[in-house]
Amino acid sequence: MNKTYYLIFLLFFAASYSSPGIADPVHVYEDFVGCFKNKTNISDKDLTDVVLSHTSVSYTPVLRAYIRNARFNTSSTPKPSVIVLPRVDSQVQAAVVCTKTLNLQLKIRSGGHDYDGLSYVAAVTFIVLDLSNFRNITVDMNEDGGSAWVQTGATLGELFYRIWEKSDVHAFPAGICPTVGVGGHVSGGGYGHMIRKFGLTVDYVVDATIVDAKGRVLDRKAMGEDLFWAIRGGGAGSFGVVLAFKVKLVEVPKTVTVFRVDRSSDQNALDMVHKWQFVAPRTDPGLFIRVLLASPTKNKTQTVNAKVRALYLGKANDVVSMMAKEFPELGLKIEDCKEMTWIQSLLWWMNHKDVEKVKTGCFTRKGTGLG
Ligand SMILES: Cc1cc2nc3c(=O)[nH]c(=O)nc-3n(C[C@H](O)[C@H](O)[C@H](O)COP(=O)(O)OP(=O)(O)OC[C@H]3O[C@@H](n4cnc5c(N)ncnc54)[C@H](O)[C@@H]3O)c2cc1C
Picture 1 (cartoon, helix red, strand yellow):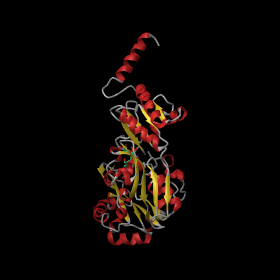
Picture 2: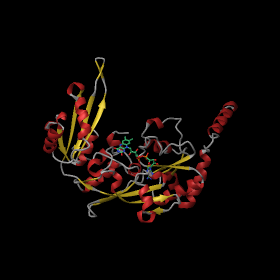
Picture 3: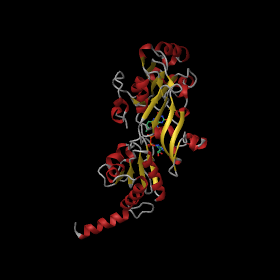
């Protein structure tokens, strides 16, 4: 590199880190590692897998693996000075204490589905705590109608799958997108296609473990009811790092029914959508009817297409006769319906090609082909 280029490089490098609030990542990494080693006694060999500097070969693949919004996957998107990939609770505790000591911001990431990239982008110097190694799920069918401890780095799909392995008549009422992370979803409230029957996801959280701002590991009893209330809907990142939630399972029938009905303006879509507004919130709580509207232009005239997608926690004949009475504008026929198990219905919602083949891969990031 000749002298002029070297000077330009130095000026550019200095300018990059002279903006207010952004520190040089090399120094941040060194300071952070010093503190982290002190708190955890981690070996140098393990350290390279757990604390990643921006020069580590794993840094970019790990960062990108859970960026779910392409708007935040650009060269100008602010990047963390350090990524921490904890494997045990004490490493989460050290990450919290060290970021606080060094006056840095900690971004906690579970499934990375935050719409604004809040789990991996910040305008100040920050560290990402990536919980993708925290994905153990223990399902216990003997306790109180079924329960599960799920670590927050697991996805909803992994939780659904582990429940199904133990029982095909138990489920968990949460969002239907399987790649959404348990950490952000549950702590933000959570709703899905069984909301009418069972309510919000947080209504089924019975215990949790959290690392608070002082670096203490607390369960429900130790954290107290106020904090336990706050992390169930208040966005847990404001209060600490949730390590795991304990959730109650719900019972679902062995056979459920799904159906699709598509109507255009010529096929009475407007009357159907109008009536849907009155039927969908009041019908049998086991029936969830979603409508997606599109407005294509046909022969220079704007039209309306309505796509109905529904889940009924029961048999096809029953939902067809119920709709004939309550919602004739839908024109539901038995041929529109498919009976299947609850776990298969999740694959159907995801437009999976073969709902018969329920396997782990269908519920992970790669298997779904979803963001
Ligand atoms: C494709 C898609 C489908 C969706 N479908 C639904 C749906 O059906 N129903 C529904 O209710 N919502 C749905 N959502 C919204 C989703 O539930 C929220 O965006 C949720 O916060 C994502 O959680 P996450 O762990 O994947 O995201 P992250 O980006 O990892 O985290 C989201 C927020 O939670 C914080 N956080 C994450 N883990 C922890 C933790 N362990 N402790 C403390 N704080 C933590 C993060 O710091 C961040 O602020 C969907 C979102 C997308 C993108």
